[in-house]
Length: 372
Image (cartoon, rainbow, N blue to C red):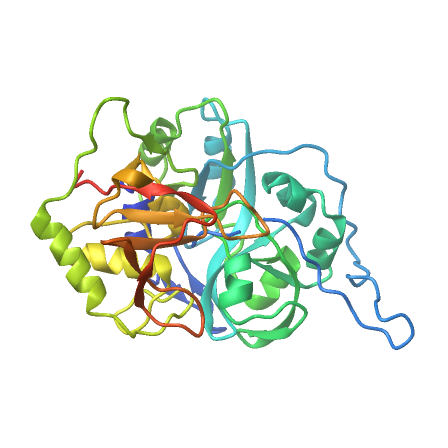
């Protein structure tokens, strides 16, 4: 879910800043997303299938180039032109993309959502997503696109109509946006109807710059109420010949005892405890009982310490998998190593926190959390 960048900011800004009359919660942080597209198809009595999207009044421009978002600049209100110009003019910044950002109640879950211009925002997404014209036309026509995790475990089914505040939206696709802080995407016009704050966030592309230094510089330069979040975590490989440090045995025991105290608690997508959890929520909560602050989401937790060989795994280490078929390289599940070949995890919707044997299919790696 290393977070002097993202972890601390997530904890700080998982706090509600503004509650709008529509039920929209404006946040100073979003919650990481997923990749490829699975457009919902419309049925027909004659052919069995119809085009995946409705005609859009606003045509979507073809993909011209691909960019990568490295930072998110975020406020609870519209960013001024002066702020946008200041960010774009910062050394190392090559492009910015304004978006509307908030957490919305979607199908009973609070979901990190952005309102975007489909023609320009598509450039910041992974190649399969960026190149899918039907997906972006679907968004422009008023559909919502949700992440794989939300689509499989959070409730909104592909092609279904879901309640979003006081509106109804169709889930047009399941797609990874490549940004771990976004779980739903709508058009800017749809965002207006839903009451999202307008242009309160900027995606920042700075491909040849140290993102940590850029974050620090922007944080000093921008008004205090504006937050800067690192979107791309820095992974920490174990240095050759140097054993990885570890937490003390007392802290590891505290983590494992805390996690075990929640055996039988239900899996709920996005839940952080104390009565229900998703996989990364359980990890963050259990480590928090030992005074260790971890990021909230799996692909950020994957950068929380040095990676160690599977054969050297110890109790308290974190195990990660790539299970998202819409983005095979995305870290989408995590568990805590219990010892004796077993792990404790919050598996999926319909299941509960449990201790099970470790499996290695689609294993991404093992991370050792250290006190630093």
